[in-house]
Image (cartoon, rainbow, N blue to C red; front, side, top):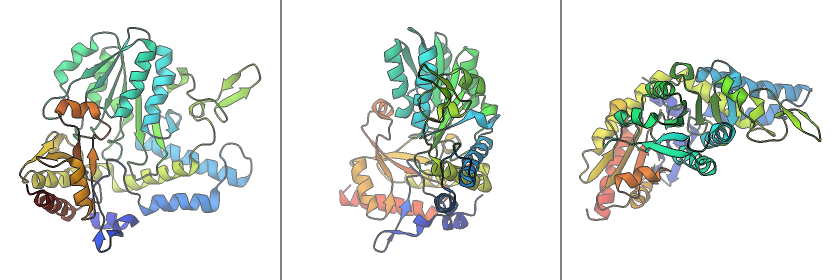
Length: 408
Protein backbone atom coordinates (compact mmCIF):
# COMPACT_ATOMS: atom_id res chain seq x y z
CA UNK A 1 0.00 0.00 0.00
CA UNK A 2 1.04 3.58 -0.56
CA UNK A 3 1.83 6.15 2.09
CA UNK A 4 -0.97 8.39 0.89
CA UNK A 5 -0.14 11.28 3.23
CA UNK A 6 3.39 11.37 1.82
CA UNK A 7 2.08 11.12 -1.72
CA UNK A 8 -0.34 14.00 -1.16
CA UNK A 9 2.52 16.20 0.03
CA UNK A 10 4.10 15.77 -3.41
CA UNK A 11 1.16 17.49 -5.17
CA UNK A 12 1.22 21.27 -4.58
CA UNK A 13 -2.27 21.83 -5.97
CA UNK A 14 -3.86 19.62 -3.31
CA UNK A 15 -3.09 22.24 -0.67
CA UNK A 16 -5.04 24.94 -2.52
CA UNK A 17 -8.59 26.20 -1.95
CA UNK A 18 -11.22 26.30 -4.69
CA UNK A 19 -13.20 28.93 -2.83
CA UNK A 20 -12.24 30.77 0.39
CA UNK A 21 -12.13 28.16 3.11
CA UNK A 22 -13.06 25.34 0.70
CA UNK A 23 -10.14 23.00 -0.04
CA UNK A 24 -9.80 21.22 -3.36
CA UNK A 25 -10.98 17.61 -3.57
CA UNK A 26 -9.84 16.46 -6.99
CA UNK A 27 -11.78 13.45 -8.27
CA UNK A 28 -11.21 13.85 -12.01
CA UNK A 29 -7.86 12.16 -12.59
CA UNK A 30 -9.32 10.02 -15.41
CA UNK A 31 -9.68 13.24 -17.43
CA UNK A 32 -6.27 14.64 -16.47
CA UNK A 33 -4.17 13.96 -13.41
CA UNK A 34 -2.51 16.51 -11.18
CA UNK A 35 1.28 16.92 -11.26
CA UNK A 36 3.71 16.07 -8.46
CA UNK A 37 6.54 18.42 -7.58
CA UNK A 38 9.30 16.27 -9.18
CA UNK A 39 7.61 16.65 -12.59
CA UNK A 40 7.14 20.39 -12.20
CA UNK A 41 10.71 20.79 -11.01
CA UNK A 42 12.17 18.72 -13.84
CA UNK A 43 10.50 20.90 -16.46
CA UNK A 44 11.43 24.07 -14.61
CA UNK A 45 15.06 22.96 -14.41
CA UNK A 46 15.11 22.26 -18.14
CA UNK A 47 13.85 25.73 -19.00
CA UNK A 48 16.15 27.40 -16.49
CA UNK A 49 19.35 25.47 -17.19
CA UNK A 50 19.23 23.24 -20.28
CA UNK A 51 16.94 24.63 -22.97
CA UNK A 52 18.16 24.23 -26.52
CA UNK A 53 16.90 22.42 -29.56
CA UNK A 54 17.67 18.72 -29.63
CA UNK A 55 19.63 16.63 -32.16
CA UNK A 56 20.75 19.67 -34.15
CA UNK A 57 23.44 21.41 -32.11
CA UNK A 58 27.02 20.34 -31.46
CA UNK A 59 27.37 22.72 -28.52
CA UNK A 60 27.15 21.62 -24.89
CA UNK A 61 23.68 22.97 -24.15
CA UNK A 62 22.09 21.20 -27.11
CA UNK A 63 23.83 17.97 -26.22
CA UNK A 64 22.55 18.23 -22.63
CA UNK A 65 18.99 18.83 -23.88
CA UNK A 66 19.27 15.91 -26.29
CA UNK A 67 20.54 13.62 -23.54
CA UNK A 68 17.65 14.60 -21.26
CA UNK A 69 15.09 14.18 -24.05
CA UNK A 70 16.40 10.81 -25.22
CA UNK A 71 17.09 9.65 -21.66
CA UNK A 72 13.40 10.13 -20.89
CA UNK A 73 12.54 7.95 -23.89
CA UNK A 74 14.73 5.15 -22.53
CA UNK A 75 13.08 5.28 -19.11
CA UNK A 76 9.60 5.38 -20.63
CA UNK A 77 10.52 2.34 -22.70
CA UNK A 78 11.54 0.50 -19.55
CA UNK A 79 8.29 1.56 -17.88
CA UNK A 80 6.23 -0.28 -20.51
CA UNK A 81 8.92 -2.97 -21.07
CA UNK A 82 9.53 -2.16 -24.72
CA UNK A 83 12.21 -4.33 -26.31
CA UNK A 84 14.16 -1.18 -27.25
CA UNK A 85 13.69 2.57 -26.98
CA UNK A 86 13.43 2.88 -30.79
CA UNK A 87 9.93 1.42 -30.44
CA UNK A 88 8.87 4.42 -28.32
CA UNK A 89 7.53 7.31 -30.42
CA UNK A 90 6.78 10.69 -28.89
CA UNK A 91 3.36 12.02 -29.90
CA UNK A 92 1.14 14.77 -28.48
CA UNK A 93 -1.28 12.36 -26.82
CA UNK A 94 -2.93 8.97 -27.28
CA UNK A 95 -5.24 10.51 -29.88
CA UNK A 96 -2.30 11.37 -32.10
CA UNK A 97 -0.97 7.84 -31.60
CA UNK A 98 -4.16 6.35 -33.05
CA UNK A 99 -4.17 8.84 -35.90
CA UNK A 100 -0.54 8.05 -36.67
CA UNK A 101 -1.25 4.33 -36.97
CA UNK A 102 -4.46 4.90 -38.92
CA UNK A 103 -2.66 7.11 -41.43
CA UNK A 104 0.77 5.51 -41.66
CA UNK A 105 -0.12 1.82 -41.24
CA UNK A 106 -3.79 1.94 -42.19
CA UNK A 107 -3.47 3.76 -45.48
CA UNK A 108 -0.73 1.38 -46.60
CA UNK A 109 -2.44 -1.84 -45.50
CA UNK A 110 -6.23 -1.47 -45.37
CA UNK A 111 -8.00 -2.39 -48.62
CA UNK A 112 -11.67 -2.16 -49.69
CA UNK A 113 -13.70 -4.78 -47.85
CA UNK A 114 -11.16 -5.21 -45.06
CA UNK A 115 -12.49 -5.07 -41.52
CA UNK A 116 -11.42 -3.20 -38.39
CA UNK A 117 -12.69 -4.52 -35.06
CA UNK A 118 -13.30 -2.13 -32.15
CA UNK A 119 -15.47 -2.34 -29.03
CA UNK A 120 -18.57 -0.45 -27.96
CA UNK A 121 -16.77 0.97 -24.91
CA UNK A 122 -14.08 2.86 -26.81
CA UNK A 123 -13.10 6.49 -26.27
CA UNK A 124 -13.65 8.64 -29.35
CA UNK A 125 -9.87 8.67 -29.88
CA UNK A 126 -10.10 4.97 -30.73
CA UNK A 127 -13.21 5.36 -32.86
CA UNK A 128 -12.99 8.41 -35.09
CA UNK A 129 -9.57 7.78 -36.72
CA UNK A 130 -10.72 4.32 -37.82
CA UNK A 131 -14.05 5.68 -39.07
CA UNK A 132 -12.17 8.21 -41.21
CA UNK A 133 -9.86 5.49 -42.52
CA UNK A 134 -12.75 3.11 -43.26
CA UNK A 135 -14.63 5.81 -45.15
CA UNK A 136 -11.55 6.57 -47.24
CA UNK A 137 -10.63 2.97 -47.95
CA UNK A 138 -14.03 1.33 -48.21
CA UNK A 139 -13.35 -0.79 -45.14
CA UNK A 140 -15.88 -2.08 -42.61
CA UNK A 141 -15.85 -1.42 -38.86
CA UNK A 142 -17.32 -4.00 -36.49
CA UNK A 143 -17.81 -3.73 -32.75
CA UNK A 144 -17.53 -6.10 -29.81
CA UNK A 145 -20.59 -5.48 -27.60
CA UNK A 146 -20.40 -4.99 -23.86
CA UNK A 147 -22.60 -6.81 -21.36
CA UNK A 148 -24.89 -5.17 -18.77
CA UNK A 149 -22.13 -5.32 -16.14
CA UNK A 150 -19.78 -3.27 -18.33
CA UNK A 151 -17.52 -6.15 -19.37
CA UNK A 152 -16.88 -7.24 -22.94
CA UNK A 153 -18.93 -10.05 -24.45
CA UNK A 154 -15.99 -12.41 -24.92
CA UNK A 155 -18.10 -15.04 -26.67
CA UNK A 156 -18.96 -12.56 -29.41
CA UNK A 157 -15.33 -11.97 -30.36
CA UNK A 158 -14.37 -15.17 -32.28
CA UNK A 159 -17.21 -14.81 -34.83
CA UNK A 160 -16.36 -11.12 -35.28
CA UNK A 161 -12.72 -12.02 -35.95
CA UNK A 162 -13.63 -14.72 -38.45
CA UNK A 163 -13.90 -12.38 -41.43
CA UNK A 164 -11.34 -10.04 -42.99
CA UNK A 165 -10.28 -8.28 -39.80
CA UNK A 166 -6.88 -6.67 -40.23
CA UNK A 167 -6.76 -4.84 -36.88
CA UNK A 168 -8.41 -5.24 -33.48
CA UNK A 169 -8.05 -2.01 -31.50
CA UNK A 170 -9.41 -1.89 -27.96
CA UNK A 171 -9.05 -0.18 -24.61
CA UNK A 172 -7.15 -1.80 -21.77
CA UNK A 173 -9.29 0.05 -19.20
CA UNK A 174 -12.62 1.73 -19.95
CA UNK A 175 -12.70 5.41 -19.08
CA UNK A 176 -16.43 5.13 -18.25
CA UNK A 177 -16.97 1.71 -16.70
CA UNK A 178 -13.45 1.36 -15.34
CA UNK A 179 -13.45 -2.17 -16.78
CA UNK A 180 -9.98 -3.74 -16.86
CA UNK A 181 -10.03 -5.82 -20.01
CA UNK A 182 -8.01 -9.05 -20.46
CA UNK A 183 -5.45 -7.47 -22.77
CA UNK A 184 -3.18 -10.46 -23.28
CA UNK A 185 -6.12 -12.72 -24.13
CA UNK A 186 -7.60 -10.18 -26.54
CA UNK A 187 -4.25 -9.73 -28.30
CA UNK A 188 -3.86 -13.48 -28.65
CA UNK A 189 -7.36 -13.77 -30.13
CA UNK A 190 -6.48 -11.12 -32.70
CA UNK A 191 -3.21 -12.82 -33.63
CA UNK A 192 -4.87 -16.22 -33.90
CA UNK A 193 -7.21 -14.65 -36.46
CA UNK A 194 -4.31 -13.13 -38.41
CA UNK A 195 -5.01 -9.57 -37.27
CA UNK A 196 -2.84 -6.99 -35.55
CA UNK A 197 -3.75 -5.68 -32.10
CA UNK A 198 -3.58 -2.09 -30.86
CA UNK A 199 -4.18 -1.16 -27.22
CA UNK A 200 -5.52 2.10 -25.81
CA UNK A 201 -3.53 2.35 -22.58
CA UNK A 202 -4.54 5.91 -21.68
CA UNK A 203 -6.39 4.66 -18.58
CA UNK A 204 -3.99 1.77 -17.95
CA UNK A 205 -0.50 3.29 -17.96
CA UNK A 206 -1.26 5.63 -15.01
CA UNK A 207 -2.86 2.95 -12.86
CA UNK A 208 -1.47 -0.55 -13.35
CA UNK A 209 1.62 -2.32 -14.70
CA UNK A 210 1.91 -2.22 -18.51
CA UNK A 211 4.12 -4.80 -20.25
CA UNK A 212 3.98 -4.59 -24.03
CA UNK A 213 6.16 -7.66 -24.48
CA UNK A 214 4.05 -9.82 -22.17
CA UNK A 215 0.89 -8.53 -23.84
CA UNK A 216 2.51 -9.00 -27.29
CA UNK A 217 0.50 -6.07 -28.66
CA UNK A 218 1.55 -4.61 -32.00
CA UNK A 219 0.76 -1.01 -31.13
CA UNK A 220 -0.09 0.80 -27.89
CA UNK A 221 -0.83 4.45 -27.13
CA UNK A 222 -1.15 6.53 -23.97
CA UNK A 223 -1.12 10.17 -22.84
CA UNK A 224 1.30 11.75 -20.39
CA UNK A 225 -1.18 14.14 -18.79
CA UNK A 226 -3.24 11.30 -17.27
CA UNK A 227 -0.22 9.79 -15.49
CA UNK A 228 1.24 12.71 -13.52
CA UNK A 229 2.97 14.11 -16.61
CA UNK A 230 2.44 17.31 -18.58
CA UNK A 231 -0.04 17.96 -21.35
CA UNK A 232 1.06 17.89 -24.97
CA UNK A 233 3.05 14.66 -24.76
CA UNK A 234 2.14 11.02 -25.19
CA UNK A 235 3.59 7.77 -26.45
CA UNK A 236 2.96 5.47 -29.36
CA UNK A 237 4.62 2.09 -28.95
CA UNK A 238 4.97 -0.16 -31.96
CA UNK A 239 6.88 -3.32 -32.75
CA UNK A 240 10.00 -2.33 -34.60
CA UNK A 241 9.34 -4.36 -37.75
CA UNK A 242 5.94 -2.71 -38.17
CA UNK A 243 7.27 0.79 -37.54
CA UNK A 244 10.16 0.23 -39.97
CA UNK A 245 7.72 -0.74 -42.71
CA UNK A 246 5.39 2.22 -42.17
CA UNK A 247 5.76 5.49 -44.10
CA UNK A 248 6.05 8.73 -42.13
CA UNK A 249 2.94 10.39 -40.75
CA UNK A 250 4.24 13.97 -41.01
CA UNK A 251 7.05 15.50 -43.04
CA UNK A 252 9.52 18.19 -42.08
CA UNK A 253 12.71 18.68 -40.15
CA UNK A 254 14.39 15.99 -38.02
CA UNK A 255 12.44 13.11 -39.59
CA UNK A 256 14.65 13.11 -42.67
CA UNK A 257 18.08 11.71 -43.51
CA UNK A 258 18.46 13.58 -46.80
CA UNK A 259 16.38 16.11 -48.72
CA UNK A 260 16.84 17.18 -52.33
CA UNK A 261 14.56 19.08 -54.65
CA UNK A 262 13.70 15.74 -56.21
CA UNK A 263 12.81 13.82 -53.06
CA UNK A 264 13.71 12.80 -49.51
CA UNK A 265 14.96 9.83 -47.50
CA UNK A 266 13.69 9.18 -44.00
CA UNK A 267 15.52 9.14 -40.70
CA UNK A 268 15.85 6.03 -38.54
CA UNK A 269 13.37 5.06 -35.86
CA UNK A 270 12.05 6.66 -33.76
CA UNK A 271 12.78 10.02 -35.36
CA UNK A 272 11.09 9.09 -38.65
CA UNK A 273 7.79 9.80 -36.90
CA UNK A 274 8.87 12.93 -34.98
CA UNK A 275 8.85 15.78 -37.47
CA UNK A 276 9.86 19.28 -36.38
CA UNK A 277 11.00 20.62 -33.06
CA UNK A 278 9.54 18.24 -30.47
CA UNK A 279 7.93 18.85 -27.10
CA UNK A 280 11.28 18.71 -25.31
CA UNK A 281 10.26 19.99 -21.88
CA UNK A 282 7.14 17.84 -21.96
CA UNK A 283 9.12 14.71 -22.80
CA UNK A 284 11.46 15.45 -19.90
CA UNK A 285 8.40 15.98 -17.69
CA UNK A 286 6.93 12.65 -18.78
CA UNK A 287 10.23 10.98 -17.99
CA UNK A 288 10.07 12.48 -14.49
CA UNK A 289 6.46 11.26 -14.13
CA UNK A 290 7.53 7.74 -15.08
CA UNK A 291 10.33 7.94 -12.51
CA UNK A 292 7.82 9.08 -9.89
CA UNK A 293 5.35 6.29 -10.58
CA UNK A 294 8.17 3.75 -10.74
CA UNK A 295 9.35 4.87 -7.30
CA UNK A 296 5.86 4.21 -5.94
CA UNK A 297 5.62 0.84 -7.69
CA UNK A 298 2.81 0.24 -10.16
CA UNK A 299 1.63 -2.84 -8.25
CA UNK A 300 1.24 -0.60 -5.20
CA UNK A 301 -0.57 2.04 -7.24
CA UNK A 302 -3.04 -0.53 -8.56
CA UNK A 303 -3.58 -2.12 -5.16
CA UNK A 304 -4.32 1.21 -3.50
CA UNK A 305 -6.72 2.23 -6.26
CA UNK A 306 -8.64 -1.01 -5.84
CA UNK A 307 -8.82 -0.31 -2.11
CA UNK A 308 -10.11 3.25 -2.44
CA UNK A 309 -12.44 2.31 -5.31
CA UNK A 310 -13.96 -0.50 -3.26
CA UNK A 311 -14.57 1.98 -0.45
CA UNK A 312 -16.15 4.48 -2.85
CA UNK A 313 -18.42 1.98 -4.60
CA UNK A 314 -19.78 0.76 -1.29
CA UNK A 315 -20.38 4.30 -0.02
CA UNK A 316 -22.01 5.51 -3.24
CA UNK A 317 -24.26 2.46 -3.51
CA UNK A 318 -26.01 3.51 -0.29
CA UNK A 319 -27.39 6.68 -1.89
CA UNK A 320 -31.03 6.21 -2.87
CA UNK A 321 -31.69 6.68 -6.56
CA UNK A 322 -28.01 6.40 -7.52
CA UNK A 323 -27.11 3.94 -10.30
CA UNK A 324 -23.50 2.82 -10.70
CA UNK A 325 -22.21 1.58 -14.05
CA UNK A 326 -19.47 -0.98 -14.53
CA UNK A 327 -18.18 -4.24 -13.07
CA UNK A 328 -17.17 -5.23 -9.57
CA UNK A 329 -14.01 -3.80 -8.11
CA UNK A 330 -12.09 -6.99 -8.98
CA UNK A 331 -12.26 -6.03 -12.66
CA UNK A 332 -12.40 -2.26 -12.29
CA UNK A 333 -9.96 0.61 -12.26
CA UNK A 334 -10.32 3.75 -10.15
CA UNK A 335 -13.53 5.03 -11.73
CA UNK A 336 -17.10 5.39 -10.40
CA UNK A 337 -19.54 6.49 -13.07
CA UNK A 338 -23.13 7.06 -11.97
CA UNK A 339 -26.46 8.78 -12.42
CA UNK A 340 -28.94 9.95 -9.79
CA UNK A 341 -32.62 9.71 -10.59
CA UNK A 342 -34.10 13.18 -11.00
CA UNK A 343 -30.73 14.95 -11.26
CA UNK A 344 -28.90 15.90 -14.44
CA UNK A 345 -25.19 15.02 -14.25
CA UNK A 346 -24.27 18.63 -15.02
CA UNK A 347 -26.32 19.78 -12.02
CA UNK A 348 -24.58 17.18 -9.86
CA UNK A 349 -21.14 18.40 -10.92
CA UNK A 350 -22.05 22.04 -10.40
CA UNK A 351 -23.43 21.48 -6.91
CA UNK A 352 -20.53 19.35 -5.64
CA UNK A 353 -18.12 21.94 -7.04
CA UNK A 354 -19.44 24.36 -4.40
CA UNK A 355 -17.95 21.95 -1.87
CA UNK A 356 -14.62 22.06 -3.72
CA UNK A 357 -15.15 18.65 -5.32
CA UNK A 358 -14.09 18.24 -8.95
CA UNK A 359 -15.86 15.44 -10.85
CA UNK A 360 -16.65 14.99 -14.53
CA UNK A 361 -20.10 15.22 -16.09
CA UNK A 362 -21.06 14.48 -19.69
CA UNK A 363 -20.46 11.66 -22.13
CA UNK A 364 -16.72 11.40 -21.35
CA UNK A 365 -15.83 11.16 -25.06
CA UNK A 366 -17.79 7.91 -25.24
CA UNK A 367 -21.11 8.85 -26.83
CA UNK A 368 -21.86 5.42 -28.36
CA UNK A 369 -21.46 3.78 -24.94
CA UNK A 370 -23.92 6.21 -23.38
CA UNK A 371 -26.34 5.76 -26.26
CA UNK A 372 -26.39 2.02 -25.64
CA UNK A 373 -27.03 2.65 -21.94
CA UNK A 374 -29.97 4.84 -22.93
CA UNK A 375 -28.61 7.98 -21.29
CA UNK A 376 -27.18 11.23 -22.64
CA UNK A 377 -24.68 11.82 -19.87
CA UNK A 378 -23.34 10.54 -16.57
CA UNK A 379 -21.32 11.80 -13.63
CA UNK A 380 -17.89 10.33 -13.03
CA UNK A 381 -15.65 10.41 -9.98
CA UNK A 382 -12.18 9.04 -10.62
CA UNK A 383 -9.61 8.20 -7.98
CA UNK A 384 -5.84 8.17 -7.90
CA UNK A 385 -2.85 7.74 -5.63
CA UNK A 386 -3.74 10.80 -3.54
CA UNK A 387 -7.46 10.10 -2.99
CA UNK A 388 -8.44 9.51 0.64
CA UNK A 389 -11.51 7.91 2.27
CA UNK A 390 -12.33 11.31 3.78
CA UNK A 391 -12.56 12.78 0.28
CA UNK A 392 -14.92 9.99 -0.76
CA UNK A 393 -17.03 10.71 2.33
CA UNK A 394 -17.14 14.37 1.33
CA UNK A 395 -18.39 13.42 -2.12
CA UNK A 396 -21.14 11.25 -0.65
CA UNK A 397 -22.21 14.03 1.73
CA UNK A 398 -22.22 16.54 -1.12
CA UNK A 399 -24.39 14.24 -3.26
CA UNK A 400 -26.89 14.00 -0.40
CA UNK A 401 -26.96 17.81 -0.29
CA UNK A 402 -27.54 17.90 -4.05
CA UNK A 403 -30.59 15.71 -3.62
CA UNK A 404 -31.93 18.01 -0.93
CA UNK A 405 -31.45 21.05 -3.18
CA UNK A 406 -33.72 19.41 -5.73
CA UNK A 407 -36.00 18.03 -3.02
CA UNK A 408 -35.35 14.43 -3.98
